[in-house]
Length: 64
Image: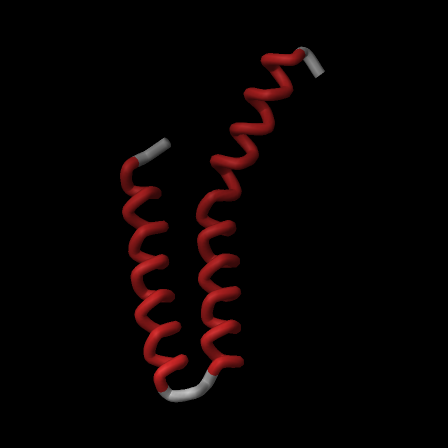
């Protein structure tokens, strides 16, 4: 795993958490939830290649 990927995920997490706090303070709970879900989707898109590599390693390990 590349260290750059870890920094990207951490950056997205920090931005999403700050936006979530600001939106909750403004009593916009629905937008806060949507921001959190959007952050989750962004992180999953960043991690998709790593997840694919993990499945390939498991497949090779167990001979599936």
